[in-house]
Length: 96
Image (tube, rainbow, N blue to C red):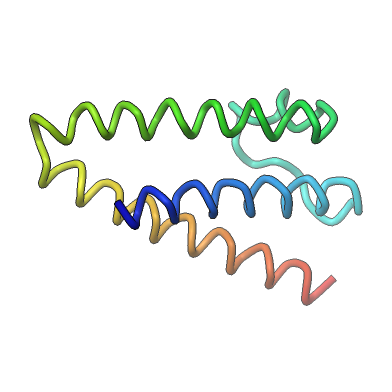
């Protein structure tokens, strides 16, 4: 359950940091699925992002009943990837 909570927090942090970096002109959205969403105001884009993240986590929850080890490993992997992305954001902010 902890990786799910971390995924939600990291998703929010990633969105807010990416939005700020784009508005500062120091970054651009790298995820082709998010480019259109990041063009929206944050009041709209963040709830859309949370809906997307919540849908993924709901799928993980459903699949955990059938493949618990796979879901646990996937959630831990996704949490680690998000952690690296957040560190990358702070690096970008620090050097700009």
